[in-house]
Amino acid sequence: MSPGQALLYSALVPGLGQRKLGKGRWIAYLAVEGAAWIAFGRKQRSATQESGQYRDLAWETARSFGGSRVDGDFPYYETMEKFLASGAFDTDPSVPGIQPEMDPSTFNGQAWVLATEIHFPPAANPLPGDPEYEAALADYQDRAYDEQFEWSWAGQPAALTDYTELIDSSDRSFRRASQSLGVVIANHLLSGIDAFVTERIRRSGRSQTEVHIRLLPPDDRNRLGLVLQVRH
Figure 1 (cartoon, rainbow, N blue to C red):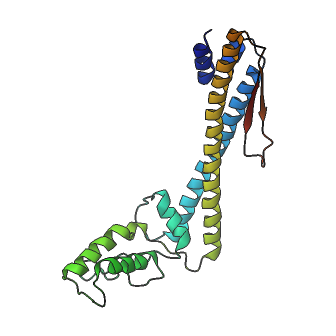
Figure 2: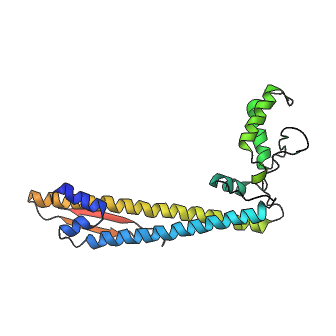
Figure 3: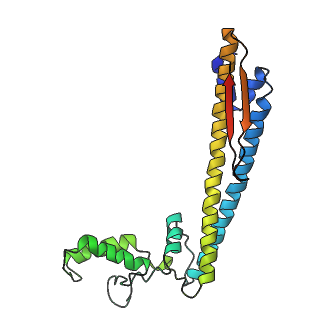
């Protein structure tokens, strides 16, 4: 093989180049690959399951206002952690137009506060129909959650605690799944570089290369790490 071929083989299938070169360490690359994919699969499944659980809990407990279920995106569920209630989108549906939420302790109330800070002139209080008011209302409608996404954790502190723990656990699982994919990518790169260097040194006629791959001692059971050492 040429060094380029050795690199390509091992970059595509970790350990393949080493095996073709007669180096026993191909087993280590293959083991790291398998362990990383197993870790990724486990964490991905955990994250997906926990994501479904916190979405179900939110719907059944905090979003039980009737109507068909519509799930939000991840930022929506993160927002539900930070605010006890969304507040109403339209505080008086009997009046034409949108009557924004005024309670600043709610998410929609904060959306209205922000919209007025952006669009209302200093020390002014525009009325409905005024350009500044209508601009703020349009901004509010873009930021606030409407009726199908309203929520309230009022009187349900235990449910909110469970929800927060589930969403945090799901987030950690997704991060660890990403870390496992990082190990997979690193394993492909290191295996390719190892095979390339090994074949280049062999062709150069210099002293035999010594290459070692080892797993890093993990700081917890959910992480993998590896180190490649090349000496010649």
